[in-house]
Length: 281
Image (cartoon, rainbow, N blue to C red; front, side, top):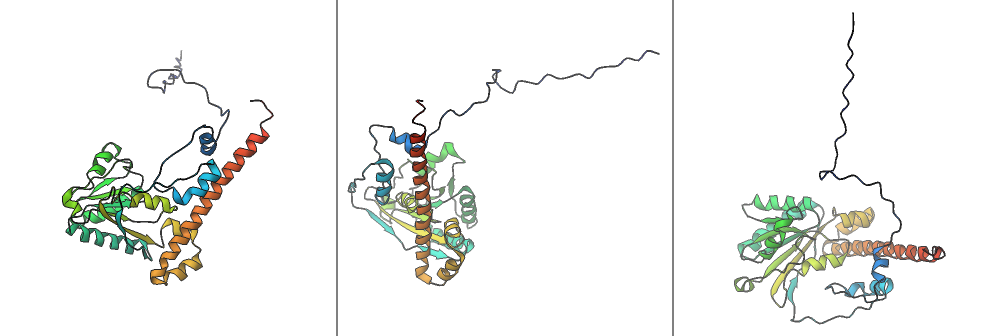
């Protein structure tokens, strides 16, 4: 009896490249450099920022660039309230929602700045559960961010945004909003650098317009958990108004860590430049 054996059919691998081009080989790193060293390669180096004064020493140390302060074109009318601290995030969130309701009743536009996407989604949901409509920009809806930010100054508008979302778009406010106090910004958390906080504050009261800022923090926020020892955290919780000192101390400590890290990168750049200077490459 004859037996016919069928060999298994082997499928040829399909080309993973959509355009049908041949894949190139693996790349190898030939050289690398830090941002600090890259910027120092320019013969002329300059920049402009509204929060550069407190970093003037670092700009000089890293880049050899002096900081010159330019006076405001118009006197600032921004009103910044005292930092409000809470023991936990839930208590902080409830206070933020209450403030949103209070400001919305006056018709003032509100811009709420959050540190990450999850917090922006959570607060937006909490606000809408109170029957208020709000819009979100958190780098997930990139194509509509500029348009949403541009409309954040309208009467009664509520906008929730991550700190980096919508930057570069100026928020205009109509005369009707100017008469009731302008744009109100709510900072929901302290950032590792106070410069980032001030960048968010600067979204309101631009070019002499009225505006205000309120600032919140809790002992469960990342900057405090990572930079404030437990013993100090417990002590600061019971200091009432003085608990804001713990936030400033934690921010200062986080800023020093980041600064030392950048100095370490600069020292590594200098060491590599000196050590590899004999190769001729």
